[in-house]
Structure formats: structure tokens, C-alpha cells
Image (cartoon, rainbow, N blue to C red):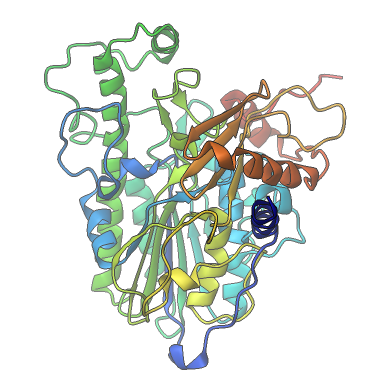
Length: 474
């Protein structure tokens, strides 16, 4: 009994206390810091990249969906278990660029600007002499949301309207990125942040990508009339949806991912030709994933749940002219808040952003410990919360507390539903009490309720997309 108690106390302390980072040794740095290319793919679950496998809704063998990113992964390190803290664009990108989880940075979901006092990765890199350029693919990351702070250029000029949101195709994003890069000073390091939105619904990539992965035997209406989500979702929840329809929906989604990969390959090839990758750190990730029918209650969506499809995302880290571990997969799990301090440390900045542990011990040259092992060597839990609008906001509590919560640790995934039912999605039942305590402690430290402050145009767009509740006309 005493041994078990000591183990539980040790685990709880490990889960609840963020680990500080030691500065990078100066001998590991070159005189000039490397260029940093950070690519964010919106709404991209890990298994949408063929180097991670393929979605379970498709049982057929597929050709490679993402050959360009697969090649990048072969030359670098691929995190097998990397998770977002929140499955919505602005909140997750805020974690990506600040090193903080949502309870720390205070951005519950789209439409809530970053508080002015929170420092960003771009501010840190700019202060270190970097030229900072951000190219945005959708209006959820409009400059007024605050992530533009620290960027010399934040190109959020979007002219393609889908429903009520302005977007740009990946091809347009890449064109704008290359045009901006052409104007930078070749003698100063560059931080280039590129966001492509295409994998987000509707799943309507340009040909030949749109139908590239659709089963040639498919004869349903998804290719002619568009995917009727409402009808398909009702059938899915009743267990009556034809597997061919699930296959078709996932195939159309992969077409979007393939198109984004094609354009990102063009971006990386051009940067390589121009010498920007000669001394560089290239990082590719996603803000959140997408449920593709494997969770019938959520259908084809993200935001309202913290299931695996919604929160497990890719992370690829590759370098040229900098010291990194030998290429290969990394098994130990990590969370989005670790990304910004990791980038800082890899370029030689001594004081990382935020409180999350950096990933230097997994990326540094030489042998590393890359195993999760409860109870002797537990991993640090990654905590998640759903982010959809809801009505329970009169008590002043943090906006998302009434929504789904989740935690991952050492291969165990637990989830608390909106009905407050605990579910062990995968892994060890014995870890449920420990992860429950971690989530309760996290929620106990959550900030108070936030009201959004937006321009009327942005508010109307986000309300129509379902990210915000309509304002009281009074």
C-alpha cells in the first residue's frame, strides 16, 4: 500500500508541475541563428498524412496522400503522439505560438483576442534579430485576434468567401508567402509562419485532388450533390449509414489534405532553391484534427469533442545545418504548448516561453529516452477541452468548463463527456483516477469567464459559423 501511495503522489506531482528548461549550450549554436519555417495545416488529423497511416473509415489501400510531407518526415523527426489542447483554430494556434495551454493564455475559442500581456514566439524571435512574416489562410486568424503581434508582416488579406468566412486556397497562400519572402533581407534570419486552411470543411479540393482517393466503385451522391452532412449524420447515429458513404466523406477530406501537401511541397522546393533551407529549422503541425465518422455523435466535425480524431495531430521537425537527433519516429507524447519553447531552444534562445516542458531531450543529437512507462517513468499528461459555444455562462466560470474534457498519458486516453460521464477511450483503466485528478486540478485553476470583443464584421462571421453565440439584442 505504501509503495502504491508513493507512486500516486509522484505521478500527481509529475502531472501537475511543469518542467523548466535548461539553456542550450553555446557550442551548439552557429553565429547566425537558423531560419525557422513553421507550417500549420488547419483541421488535419495525424492519420491524414500518409506517413502516419490512414483514417479507419477507409479500408482500401490508398496511394500516398502527402508525398511531400512524407519526404520531410523521412529526413527529420515525426512525433507519433502529439496533441492539441483545444480543437479549434484560434485557441490552438495561441497555444502553438505562446507555449501556454488555454487556461493560461485565456483564449477559449475563435473570436476571443489574445490578451495583450501574453508574449508570443514572433515577439521573442523578432527581439533576437529575426525578420518575422506570417501568411494566413482564413479569417479566424485575422490580425485583430492578436497573434499578429511581433510579426513584421501579417498577411491576412483574404478575398475568397466561403459561407461567411473569408479564406484563401493553399495555392494562394503559397503565392503570397513566396512574394513576401522575395522582399526579405537575405543577411538576417527569417521566421516564416504559413497557415493553410484547405482541409477544413467543405471537402471540395480542386481537381485532380478532389476525387483522387474516392473509391472508383462509389456511386453515391457525394460527388455530384455535395456531401449532405445532416442526412448522413442522422444515418450514422442510427447505425444505418452505408460504409461506402463514410469512405467517400473521408476520401474527399483526404483530397483537401493532398492538395495542401502539393502546394506546401511547392513552397518548400522554392525556399530550398533560394537557399532559405540551407540553415533552417522546418516544423509542420496542425491546430487540431477532424472527426470522420468514427465517433457517431460528432460525425464530421471538430470543436465539440476531444476524441482522438479531433486532438491528435501531426508534428514533423526537420533541420538542415543544425544539430538534431537522427531521423525517425518519436513515441513519447507531447502537447501543443511545448512547441514554442522547443523552437526557441532549438534556435538558441535561453528562456523559453510559457510553462510547458520543451522537447529538447527528444530532439537533441545522441541517444535519448523515448519510452513512456507507468508507473516507473510516467509521461507528462496532455490535457484537452472542447470549445464549442454553449449557454451556461451566467456563473462567471471559464467558458469551456461545461464542455468535454480529456487527457492523454502513456497510451491512455480518458474523456469526460458533457453528461459528466468518464470514458476510458484507450489504455489502462487504472490510470483513470490519476488523470481525473489532473483534469480537476487544471479546471480548478481555469480563468474566469471571458466576453469576446470583436468588430461587427468578425462577430457576424463567427456567429454564422457557430463559433460564437448571437449577442442579446438588448
